[in-house]
Amino acid sequence: MKKRVTAVILTAALAVAALAGCGNTATSEPAVEATGSTDTAATEAAESTSTEDKTITVAASATPHAEILEQAKSILAEQGWDLQVTVFDDYVQPNNVVESGEFDANYFQHIPYLDSFNEEHGTHLVNAGGIHYEPFGIYPGTKSSLDDLESGDVIAVPNDTTNEARALLLLQDNGILTLKDGVGLEATVNDIVENPKDVKIQELAAEQVARVREEVAFVVLNGNYALQAGLSVAKDAIKYETADSEAAKTYVNVIAVKEGNENSEKTKALVDVLKSDAIKQYINDTYDGAVIPVSYTHLTLPTT
Image (tube, rainbow, N blue to C red; front, side, top):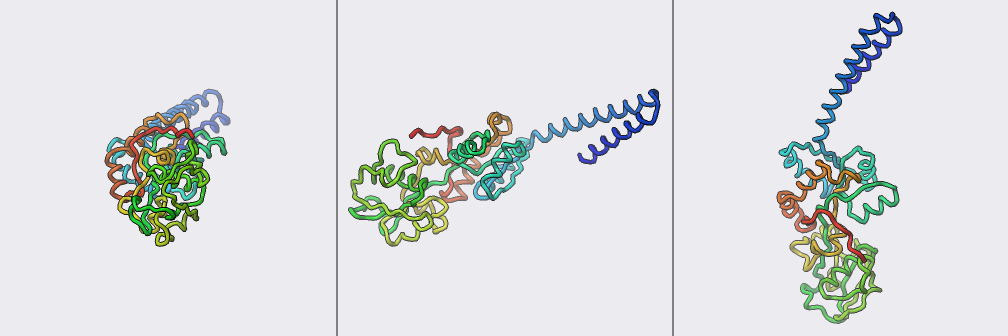
């Protein structure tokens, strides 16, 4: 394409040179040639644009996002789409390149981060569809059943704001404790209003929780730290966040696009394939419960 554009510019330049060095009669022919060349270039540009319209460019994190997208390529190709995936190792540029229009979409973030990024950077990105979430799980320590909990037993949880809230909500969902109404994903141990089994909640840095499994009754871990500890969500977790839980709906990883593009053919094709049975099966077979596909498309943040 660069050669064709260069040729057009050269033709136009020659036409201008002819106009400057000749009389009016001689000018008309080069001018027509330049116009004709410009028309040709416009036609070629339109054809190129038409071709590019079948290309979907996505910025993604390496794992699991880019891996999942790679599986979607062949399915989209059967539908006439060329999916091009670029891996980014930060959480800023993937949003910037979608906002600028350089990329059609990105796949790396959850809704709270997306909303926060828009507010802080003045961007106009929207959720086009929820694809997967990475669940928190309750894992055995010195005990293997929640029914065996006794007064004074210790459960270790992460101490950072987001992860602690998710851990406490999971414990609440499984009847171990009750939190104040409305605290939601801002919950802390200070929001526990009922603790019928009189368990003790031990707050630790997220990376340290798995290390105390032999010292406490249970630990509550997010997916990546469970994997690092050699634990499988599907095989080892006693309980984990379900797809309809508050945390799962909030922290689902989404396809993000620039506002106005959420209903484009490209976006619909991409989201439909990523939510297809084939991709869901790949996720389930590959990540052993550490990544779970979701069945809904557009998500509304739960009110707290």
